[in-house]
Image 1 (tube, rainbow, N blue to C red):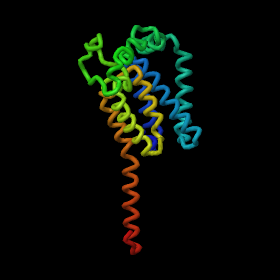
Image 2 (image 1 turned 30 degrees about the horizontal axis):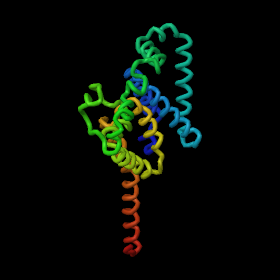
Image 3 (image 1 turned 180 degrees about the horizontal axis):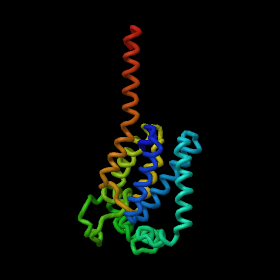
Image 4 (image 1 turned 135 degrees about the vertical axis):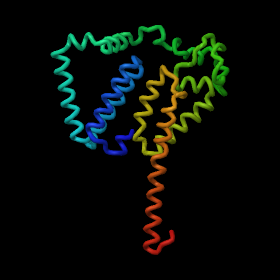
Length: 225
């Protein structure tokens, strides 16, 4: 999000990508790995196609890709024996096989078994009411179950107004976060709300600066409008 508003040095951008990639892999979250990979690919692809991507960054990415490919080719045994690599490969290979990799394991059954809560919601907490002492592992699903259709509408409306406010250029970020949120409850993640607030406030600040500049120009030209 920051790189779309402020030109970052290629080294800083690549360091940030590499660091967050390691953190993402270390989490061993299948949803996080998939969402992160999708977000990074989409961002890079769109920037390249739009011809606004820094050429130096593209060259650096190409060089890094070649280096990593060569390092993997000549050190396959060393890399394959790395614990993080083994753990990530094991997690990715078991997508759809774990006992919670299904709708019931994430709590989606509640939408079917307890339809009486879908209008106004069941409220948050007291998960024993639904047979399991676990929360609904879904961002939108949990909002719907806890706050009903009315709450879901208000929640989505706030998100839509935020990304619409800056021309939808951050819509893909929200999309991949919601993709991650299909199996995780993101409404208790503070960073999600900080992200939405940051996206929503951008255009307001831009207009404030624009109007302020227009006002000063008008005063200099003897206009009061």
